[in-house]
Length: 236
Image (tube, rainbow, N blue to C red):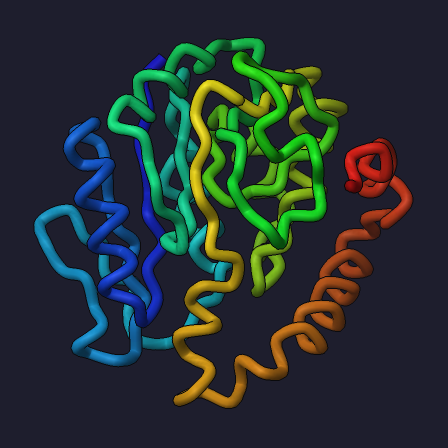
């Protein structure tokens, strides 16, 4: 299947540049979604889509992508945080082996000390099926994003991991896969760490994220029990 990759960029040009430089050597379908209010932190080139200065949040990025791909078929859509590194030179080729009609979410294993999910870390040399996929560097079957778009506008802080995993596995009867053949390092909260000294709002992230997440679940009558089913077996 074909693929397209979107790198999400917010006031972190240096981080975006490193990810773009790595992936653009492997694929001609890599784009940057830019949403920086600090002008000098914008990553701009011919493959940049500038979404303006008003902070749309991670959920806004997802909303844009869901709309962008709504009429596409037979394609996997990468939605990548930019706080990642140590990307293998053949990363895209490895991942593309799993871009199959029966798969809903395909994700590399993570080298991430803060990751609470043991199945997201490398535990073998091939792949494993998962009930839940933490969406740091996900490739989505476009059909999953079409289902996810029904809950738009999505949670501002982008906590869509649980819902997208359920829509893939339970609604569409697709497989969620974590690929151990390739591992990516994730600097958890990388942009927030960078912005903390100049933007005090980031220190309120946890409190605001939980509150707005619960509001979003209530708006769409999404049961937290439904989202958490099967996840508990994945905790370390």
